[in-house]
Length: 420
Image (tube, rainbow, N blue to C red; front, side, top):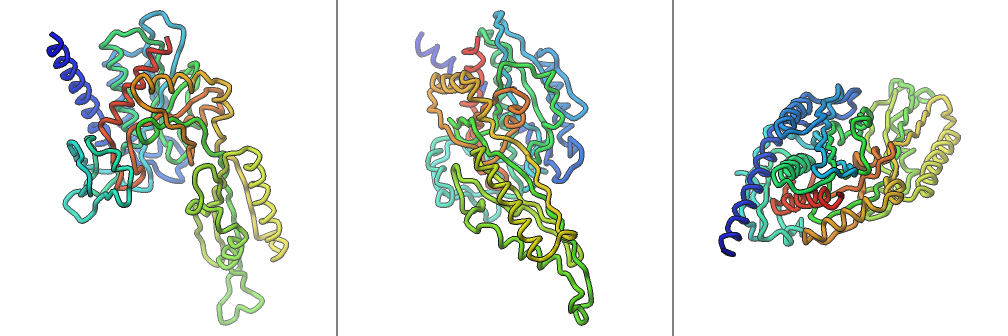
């Protein structure tokens, strides 16, 4: 009898695994790459198509309050089946990174990775444990990779597939659970989607974004973030007759950049270190536009970084007498979500307990970036970030561990159960 029960349990687990994979492969077929500098959300039609597909799937599962907002945010409710008053939210985003194409994704499932290089498609590209040492921890896992021509889309379609599969498991198992709200948002990668988030349709005690990396990753803080827009007005003249006439905006831009510390940049910082980052520069002699990112975890240090940047700008304008030619605007983008999460410690403790009961060691790491949870925190909802089992996001070397994805489903289900 024991062997029979074990066999049935394995069969049931394999069925759940296949449901998860089927969902993931169907979602990555949608090209949902967001478009930088978009003025509206959703920034791409593919996001709307995936959102409409998810609405149909949620309705088929029997969820209530299924809605698609005019800005492409999907929300729904799975009511508690035991009268629980607690409501927990789960969020993932629809879009993929603008940094790499997500069109015509051709994914390959590698059963039980045995180590060594992973060839991508039929070309010469490969993922090597020499470049990515974390692969050594994934020996024995089944991995999903691309053919080397696109990103995979695990960021964040793995999160969507995990939430949807967890909902299905909660419904089928009839295990007592809290109220569960879900939301799928557009344009997370360009920081736009949460500007139109329908908070009235997402009332909950706290929430979790399912948007992290390796199994066990649990994140409760992120950068404070600001953007700096600079416009330098030059004056063009023929190079042969330019003396005392030409004002070269390109040369001025190069000179200004020298004011910034060379070691406080993304490529030379890690963990909790902040930075200044020249994200974009474009123009000609007549006009140059520059965009900088300012990032810092500590609120006081973040304020100092912004003040320092403004001081450099003032010094530069004075040095070159550019008061009418040099324009600087510093604007906040998002805040460290820890300031809200620390007031709702049970959101962290519940996630840690769920992971531990699933046999997963929680790995507390700061996010060197932002998530939808950071903007949700501004709206008053604590929202830690939980792993998806994905790696190497935003690149053709992106991959996902099937076991990691299954573990994410287990943790979501366990949170729903423990929250009762």
